View 1 (cartoon, rainbow, N blue to C red):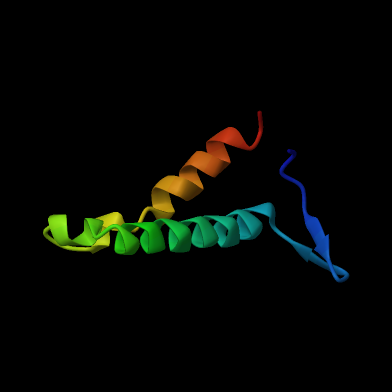
View 2: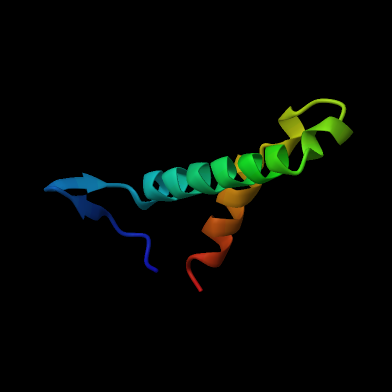
Length: 65
């Protein structure tokens, strides 16, 4: 994947914004899995279960390869 603009209905969109949306969707999935199996009961605060920054940085690191 090259980091060039993506055309979405004639509007140029930065590839980072597409990765943010993808990371958000993955984060929603991870939060639902954590809620389904009750993993949020075992942490002091549920916020550490939000992996958006980790997922997004992983996508940015893996995408150019």
